[in-house]
Length: 160
Length: 160
DNA sequence: CTAGTATCTATAGTCACTATAGAGTCAAGA
DNA sequence: TCTTGACTCTATAGTGACTATAGATACTAG
Image (cartoon, rainbow over all chains, first blue to last red; front, side):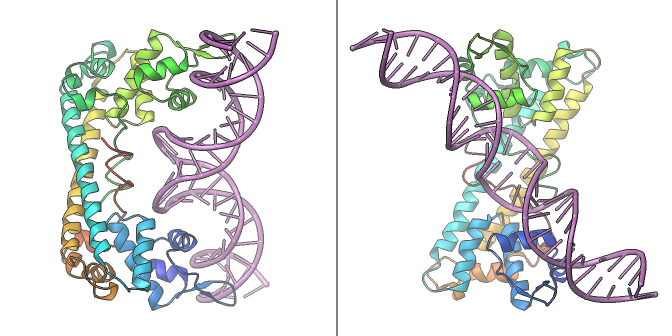
């Protein structure tokens, strides 16, 4: 199976497959005489494992560790469930942070329903001064806190 | 006020201030004889506006529009509240996506409590096959769906 | 033989910064 | 005056997880 076939079977883009190879997640495959990559059942399964991990939000570096464990399954697997637990904690924190943000955005939206000029817009004023919306919130009044993880449109990098 | 003073007053890093200038969010300030940047009250306010927007998860390109509107507040501000509304929708989708992910991670965690070798670890098996954890979920069984927005540690880019 | 598709490598771009290198400026103390 | 150290300057590269592009080569169908 050539790279296009593997891409079609898994739904992973061709470039991404090559990227995973470069990053060491996928092994360097055999080549045809014309230097085309050749994949087999093992590669397919490995890529699916990787994609499944990615769907769970695991990062390539974590996936690498899991793959190494998969290749050499000696020793205790307790760290795996710990990894997942840590990950859940991380997600919880993200959700919490987004909920908080949403609350403030809702308050912000209520500052103006539109129909004014810029200097009479309650939202603009609120953005100016941290005024009605955030002054009472310790978490929000610290401007130096790092911003949220926001992407252009839709959730994640392109919608779920 | 030099750049360090502005940084201290706002909690924004010096490099970030220069970055905002390069991106056109902050105007090029006056300079001292020794070529140091000199800031005034206007710059302070503008930077605070920017930081407040960032805290609300607005992206530089959106902030640029808001700043332009702030500079020339003619016309109707309705688009501002629409921008915030769209943003809230976006956040909602992200939260939804993360909740979904969390649910699956919880299921995944239940596949193994540790204490096994790798080839007997339920989590590893589940990652292999989409097995018990995800097979019944249409949303999850599509491997090609784009992954979530996950950062290394803590929420956002470094904690809330 | 030709046209079109698939693949190859290498490199640069994305975003919102962050980090580094190497040089210049300035204020305070010896 | 000299030195020390803090601050600032510019320019460039790095981050993560890909994505996009350019230009070359390989294969397939007609």
